[in-house]
Each structure stands twice: as structure tokens, then as C-alpha cells.
Amino acid sequence: MDRRKFIASLIACPVCASTARAEGAAPHWEYEGEHGATKWGDMDSKFKACAVGAEQSPIDLTAAIRANVDRLAINWKPQAYDIVNNGHTIQANVKDGGSLTIGKTAYELKQFHFHTPSEHAFGGKRTAMEVHFVHAAADGRLAVVGVLMAAGKTHKGFASIMQAAPKKEGEAKLKATLDPRSFLPKGRDFYRYEGSLTTPPCSEVVDWNVFGTTIDVGTADIDAFKALFPMNARPLQALNRRFLLKGL
Ligand SMILES: [Zn+2]
Image (cartoon, rainbow, N blue to C red; front, side, top):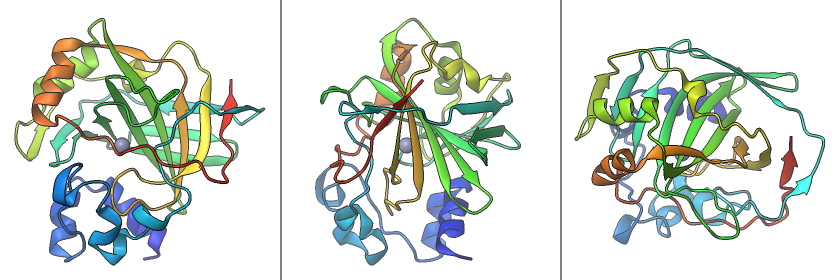
């Protein structure tokens, strides 16, 4: 298996942490303290990109260049997802969950998961949360669609995910079908750049697409997430020599 396919299989895997342990692959990492985000690159040779990579994520989205970029053709399917607490986040695993097409490249939706606060920022400011929809193409290349979430009106889908979410590492099933498109904002302007996974091994294989408009989620549901994961956002990374594009 080549590196990109291996990474894609880790992303898609419902029991990533235990698979990684079984293969003797990944050391334990956290966001703060001894195993925190500023230490990831030194923890394991496989995590080197976290320290020395020049195309890392997340980034601040302020300095964007307006461009005529390929739009996102999103074709996600509603389903009753398996909701996993993997020790780092709450994640919905997707089976035959539809596709994302950018230009001529088709990606399959594998999973979506949440961070608090948001990982991407505008002018250094982060919002309460961010959701990442992770897609993989046949060649192993990844495309992530990010939506920043702010405290406001209750979002029924997010509320149902937090109701089902296991309090400890484990898996549960949503009681009802959820339409993931309910997480898409009304405004469709978005930012595109070439970046990385925001968790170890920080591999630089991700086409990032982050919407410029936030969606509302309920404060009680944000608090429920924070009770499980008080902080699971990586610090902002330098843009370096990359182009940050803004499309409509
Ligand atoms: Zn993420």
C-alpha cells in the first residue's frame, strides 16, 4: 500500500486508534502538555511533518486571493451514522455516504468529526467549533470540507449526534437519519488551499475547502462536546509559500 492509500485507510477506519496501536504505529498524542501539539513532530519519526512540514493546517484564512476556482459539487446522502468517540473527537462514520466532486476529481465521503474551538480562524479569531467532512479520492488524495460553527440556534443534527455520542471511547448508532447537508451554510463562498491533516501524522495530502460563513449550533450541545473534549484544535500554522484562494 502506498503512503497516501495507507493514510486514507487510517482516515476511513472506524477504529483508527486501536489499529494504529496494533501495528505499533502511533504513539499517544494529545493537544496540550507533554504530548501536546507543539511536541507532535518530535514524538515519532512518522510525525515529522508536524514539525518540519511547510504546508500544514489549520491556517488563518484572512489573506485570501479572489480566484475563479472549481466549485464544490456536494452530493452527500442522509443516513443513520455510527457515532464514534475515538479519544480525540466525536466522529460520524459514513458508509456509502455520497461524493464530493471538484473539477474532474471525485472524492468519497468517509467520515465527519468536530473540533473545539474552530481550527481555522479569521484574523486570528476562532469560533466555538468546526466540523470537518473528510473525503478520499481513488488515488488516496484527501479533500476536507470545513464549516465553522458558532453558538446560536439549536442545530438538530448536531444535537442528535451529541445525544448519541459515547462518553468514553466507543461507538453508538444515531437513532434517526441525519442529513449532513444541514451542516452547510447558506453563504457558499469558500477558501481553498493545499494543506495537511490537523492531527498526527500531519500528512500533507489534503485539499482544504473551508466555507466563509458560519452555521449556528446550540450552546448546550457545544457544552456537551466540551465536557468530553475541552480543547481539540491544533494551533494555527504558517501559510508559507502557499496560495490561499477565495472562490464563490
Ligand atoms: Zn478535523
